[in-house]
Amino acid sequence: MIDIHSHILPGIDDGSPSMEISLQMLRMAADNGTTDIVATPHSNLEFPYDEKVVRSLFRELSDKSDGIINIHLGCDFHLSVDNVQDALLNPAKYTINGRGYLMVELPDLTSLSAMRSVFNRMLETRITPVVTHPERNPSVQNNIKEVELWVRDGCLIQVTAQSLVGRFGSRAQRFADQLFHADLVHFIASDAHDCEDRVPVLTPAYKLVSQRWGREKADSLFIYNPAAALSGDPIYATPNPKKSFLSSLFRL
Image 1 (tube, rainbow, N blue to C red):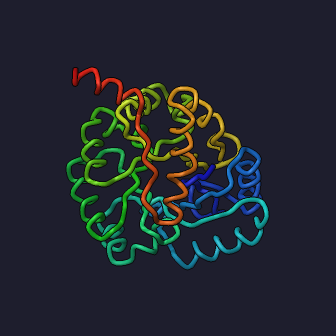
Image 2: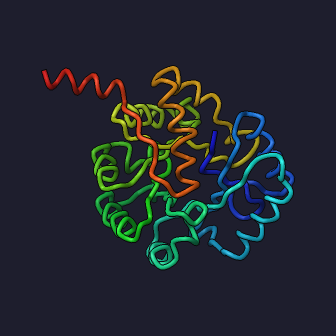
Image 3: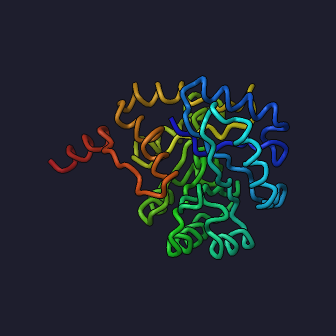
């Protein structure tokens, strides 16, 4: 499996506090079936994104974790005027492996229609926004129609693995289910921050998706789509069997 959202770089945001913890997180991920993981440090007012520091820590962690797991670099990109302007000018600075897919975190309270305009600006410059954990966002939870518009425009959606098993509450879990039923989920990632609570473990979510939606769907969300994000290729599309069945009923 490939995990495209994690906070494994040490001492740079609210994730791993030390190199030792970072290596423990990587071993935990590898022991639970993850072959590749993307370090996505925050870029926001609380945790400014210093590219030189980020890349230095990334190289150090990559060297020390050699043989454990493959590490890639991205960013947990928060939408602000300055951030967006910089990303439009320097897309490789923030995108996964510099190849076009950008992990975008929405503000908790925001104008969803304004977000669509920002996303379209990114898409015009060949940045593909991957909206992170919308199931946990209060502004989005009551507006799945807006998510449908984002996806129709070309955005992609990442759900947190632990949301599927209730870690972030029943409301987030229910909305994650709604996103699945509407065929609006393209990636499952850990958004790992530590080794105890928000862990870099995807296996329980993979098993749940396999049981409810089929092995092919699970493989697309945990393996093939994330692999495409690493390489900058188009994602692997699979039909939603439940959605297809309901659609066929309405056509009768």
